Image (tube, rainbow, N blue to C red):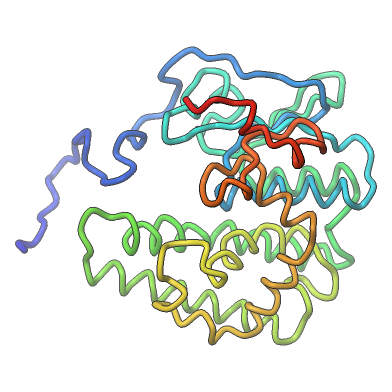
Length: 285
């Protein structure tokens, strides 16, 4: 394979980019006009059951399980593979065109919140929950996740699982970083029950869908073996403990469109939807 020589000025080649070539582009903004649906609850979530989406539905289900009022929500499905995130309504809430996006309609004027970490913090402050007694520690780990996960998803995940051609250098580079991050977590969880200490917080909710999912085998094919995930025993213990929480199991189902059908809840508008399953009501596009 000949060495790639970058041009003096980069130009976009449509169709280049492998699995996600149809939705990746070097410009922002809406590609089409499309209003977003609005349900009857105070919180309107527009998302997909990816790790970033699960962070928020996990938080919402935990708040409901803890008995907080005003937390009922509508979770609308955004099919990113079909470009729903580039509709004008979605871009109006998140100009970055990434899920999840939240519209908080509980006040006199709707408040938009985008970026998963910002949504977690907004909800934690709004309901006075899951920030923990050591707020600085919780926020430190929350922002650790926001800064670290792109190496896991866009770096390791892309080159190991999705890139059209396997290349040794990027796979080695990002595998090394992901294993370093897992070691950071494993060392931390060797000394505390949860990420920020003895209390379950939004730091756990942010980190679990990515790193808990990784060590449990939910992400990137045979990565559990490739990364020797079993060796991170403290991360494994923590990942199992959160998975055992009923709210976490419900949160992982919402807006999920992959895997066993029994684990999917395409849209969530009422608590009873977990029993009736909205995929029975919604025809695939």
